Every structure is written in C-alpha cells, then in structure tokens.
Picture 1 (cartoon, helix red, strand yellow):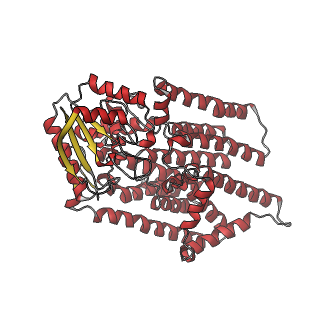
Picture 2 (picture 1 turned 90 degrees about the vertical axis):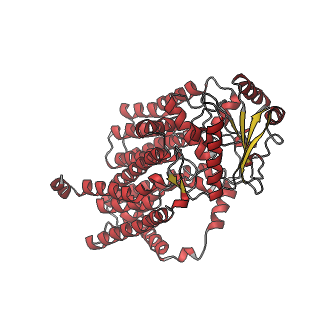
Picture 3 (picture 1 turned 120 degrees about the vertical axis):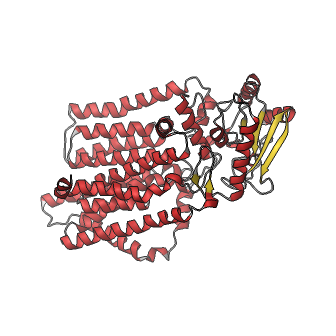
Length: 535
C-alpha cells in the first residue's frame, strides 16, 4: 500500500484529502449549531418515515426531492434512529464532495493544486444550516463537474453518461437544480464539440436524445408515481416553485442590488483578495490570443477561455433561486462551480511559472484553507460544554440553542411521552414536526406545516379535520410560532386555517404550557408550547 502511494502522488493526495476532511468534520458528528423545531424537524421526521416505509409526498409533506429521505433513512437503519446517524450520513456526503472536487481540479492542474482546491472547498463548504437535504445535492453537483471536465480533457462518451447519472440523482434531490444543470450540460457539450469541430455522430445524437428526452421522462415518471394521488394544491405545497408559493419574491435587479450593497470597499483591499484578483487578471490575460501566437497555443487559449465561460455559466444558472428571491443562503449552490473556476484561473496563471513557485503557492493555499477550516472545528470543540448538551432519546448531541429552548423541548417531549398512550399520537402545528421525531409518533395528517404562505385551502382544512376525527386525536400541540410577525408565517386561525383554528378552539382545552410566550418566536429560539387536550 505505502509503496503504491509513494509512486502515485495523485492517489496519495486523494487519500490525504479524505483523511484531512475526516479530521476537520468528524467533530460535528455529535454537534449542530442550531436545531429548529420546524426545518430540522421536517428533515428528521421525513427520514424516520422513509425508514418506516412511508412514501414522500403521499404519506408526509416533503418539499425537496424524494431521494434524500431514503439515503438518510438508510443510516437510521444501519446506525440507529439518533440524530448522530444523520450527522454521520452528512459527513459522508461532505467527504465525497471534497474528493470529487479534488479529482475535478486535477483534470486541469497538478495533484498538489488539486489537493489545495479540495481543502479550500472544505474551508468554505456550503453548509445549508436549515436542512440536511442539500448536502446530497452538493455531492451530486461535484461529481457532475468532475465528469464534465473529464470529457473536456478526454472526449469519451462514457463521461457524459456518468454526468447524466449525477444529474438524474440531482433531479431527485432538488429538481430545479437538476433541470438547470441538465440544460447546462447539453449546452456545454455542444460548445466543447464545436471548439474541436467534432461531428454530430450517432453516439452524440443518442446522448442528446437521452439527456433531453429520456432523463426528463424518467424524472417525470418518478415524480408522477409519488404525486399522482395528490391534489394540485398539495403538489404545489410539495414543489413550491411558482412565485405564489414563495414567501419571498423580488426582481433580479433587486437581488443583484443586495449583493452590491453587501460589498465592503475596505474588504476589497484585503491582501488575500488582492492576491487572488491579480492571479485571475493575469490568467485572463493569458487566455487572450495575440498576432504572434502559434496555432497550438491559440487552440489552448480558446480551450481555456471556453472552460472559464462554461464554469462561469454554471455559476450563474445555479444562483437562479437567489436571483428570484434575494435569500442569501441560496447563493451557496454556486460554491462548487466558483471554487473550480477560481482554481482553474490559478492553474492557468501558474502553468508557466517555475516548479518552486507553483509548489509554494499550492502549499500556501492548502495551509490557508486548513487554518480556516480548523477555526470552525475549534468553535465546535469550544461549544461542546455540558450546558450545550441536548440529552434525549434521539438527540444526544451538542447544540447552542438557548437553554430555555432546550428546556421547552425536554419538558414537552417528556409530557407527551408520559401522557399519551402507546398507540396514541398528537397533532402538532403550525410547524413543529421535531416532536413527532422525538416521541417516535406519526403525524395524523400528511400535512405537517401550517403557515400562511402554504396557501392551505378550505377543502384541505376540512380533509384534515376529518382525519383528526377519524383517528380520534385527543391531543394538539401548538407552538408560539402560530402567532408570528415574520413574513409569510401569519397568525394561525386568523390570517389562514380559520376552519382548523375554530375546530381546535371548540373541541380542545389547555392541558399544559411550556416555554416563552411573551417574546416574538424565533426559528430556533424563544420557543413556547401549549398542549391542548380534547374536552
């Protein structure tokens, strides 16, 4: 093993990438900055239901693709139903993403710079703080990029089919990003082939037919199987891609304006930013052909220019959610493309420098990246103190949620376990599926979110009330987010869900109250719970 690694630096650095990633991220297997009773509860409940054999969309509300509940549910099966199983499953995706970025960068650079690129990606890994779903999407995107760049380097048709597999999986993780990148893949292949004057042969015609017809039809088939029993409004709630389904809508110009407003002129003078800006400028200058440029060099410059344009194009199309919403975290989808674009510029800039300079630069970037990543690991270790430990049957982890939030969750979970019969469940609203997961109970309805922006019609309310009656639900859990000034959430029973609100008021009475009912409720703080019992 060791002699092989010594003789194969690329394999050695790939292994080292995984080992360093493991050292950097393994401390987070029992640590999560914040747990939200809504968003994280949604994920955990979905994974638990998939583990039990329920279907996404049909048996429980789910707003992403159907693949990740089964992926994370498999880890529940393998490692148990504790939250640490999910954090370990996320760690696997992070390490896989870093490894794919390493191999992607190595298609246009040496292994040492590719190693630096992977560590830089780890340092600025796009953590979506509110969901575990998107880590799978980042892994699929990273693998797709690796396959596409392989095709650019060596035009074998199998690389395109491997790209299609990753795109298909991405469609089952986040369908809008899958479709955007599928279109981007077809356009990229067209541009690459035109650069080298490759003919549109039968193999390529077959690829375009599969990518633009077969893959979309397969994706449609999967979603149709899972959604065909639902009403149109239930489908809209699960796949909220219309403007009316969003709680935040702005114009593209307004979104761009938000970016410019966040730019701090003083930060642009940061030595690291100036250094990378100079490298990018120098790299772009090297892509410009001059009169005396030889034909081989001219072709190389065109190839480099095409690579940069394709990566930049993918960066732009993967910001589409941000451009139509202005929600900052949606920019994170572009990070894998941005990292590859940046390291492509670095690779182009240093190719004609000495071995010493290129090696020194690669080591410098790797060292800087490790320092940045270690800083997060240090914060993680710093926060692992007894008062931050949330000890429940399914959540033995450290989290920095406020102490009163933890007390509310513990007291509520304890009350439900002690007062409900073994075959009894409860109805949680407006958006508190965490308690279904913590108590191991199934929601009496497939709908688990009741905010104003969900646009729940009266017909659906009547159906939910009927389900509560049929199952003889005796307990209702209402959190303080039922009365929120936050955009799109509304006041339960007044701005939305008037029928369910009246039904609960007429048939249930207060049995217990926990937490904060004085302050404006937060996403993962200032949490209050009222438990109602049937009269």
